[in-house]
Image (cartoon, rainbow, N blue to C red; front, side):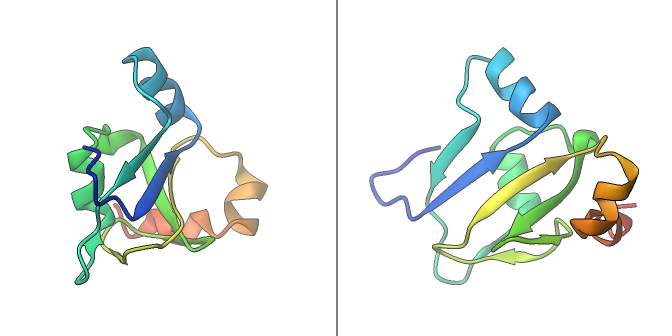
Amino acid sequence: MSSSKTNTTVRMFGALHTIRKERGLRPFEDMYIPPEGRTGLELANELDLPLDKIEGVFINNLARSLDETIHPGDKVAFISTGVPGPHRYSLGIHSAGKHLR
C-alpha cells in the first residue's frame, strides 16, 4: 500500500484501529493519492477495511461520506461505527453516516 510517492496519511479510529492492530498492521497508512483524487470507498477497499464497520471519513477535519473525493495532502481518518450519540452530532458523524445507508 505504501509507495515511494506517498502524499497522504490515512488514519483509522475506534474499532478500525483495533482491527488493523489485530491484523499486525499500523493504525495509519501513508498512501499515494493521484491528482484527480480517490473516494473514501476506494481507499477503504484498498486498505481492506470492513465497510460495515465504517461510519464515515474525516477529510480535513470534516465528517464526510465514503463517496467524497480525497485529494493529495488531505487529512484523512476513517471513523468506525459505535461513536456515542451526542458526539455523533457534535462531530458531524450523524449526517455523514446517513449517506452510507
